Image (cartoon, rainbow, N blue to C red; front, side, top):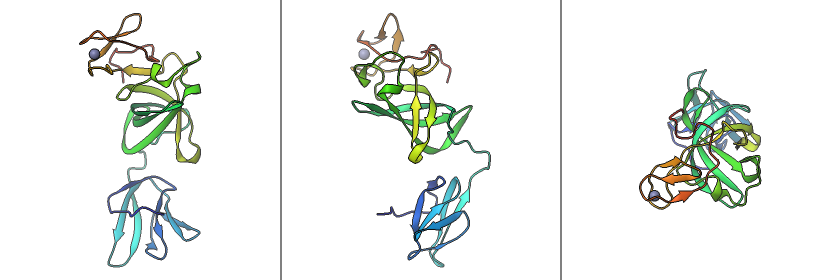
Length: 189
Ligand SMILES: [Zn+2]
């Protein structure tokens, strides 16, 4: 099944836009096996009167995470073997699109990790490196010292955690673990 697209929706290259039974492919698109895909990073334009679909490219120098990019994002979910991150910044630029990254438990730390919950919690702000973009998924790693959690929030009360020997909540005193970056809490994003 292909999702219904709307004008103004943000797409990336290779994203499905529709089928040739529905639309006439126009600029910024290509067709493969009857399916219309985007060739650009940009916004969908649908001309319903003429059944034409096109992609209006955003600025050419717009940043997209690439292999080797250092990205900043927010942890949005945690499973036993991986965490998902909403990427908001790649290199020095904030991103206008929605990019999701995945950190597998084996890519978190150089040390063995029992549980993803000892490394990340939902809402944490992390710095990570893009190690693969296979299947249009950004695979991230935080093994290096300068990578990992930059800001963390208490899982009990939402208070800001500060670095002591472990991490301690400034509000309720709860002690938590994270895979922190070397400049955790220093305000550098
Ligand atoms: Zn707390």
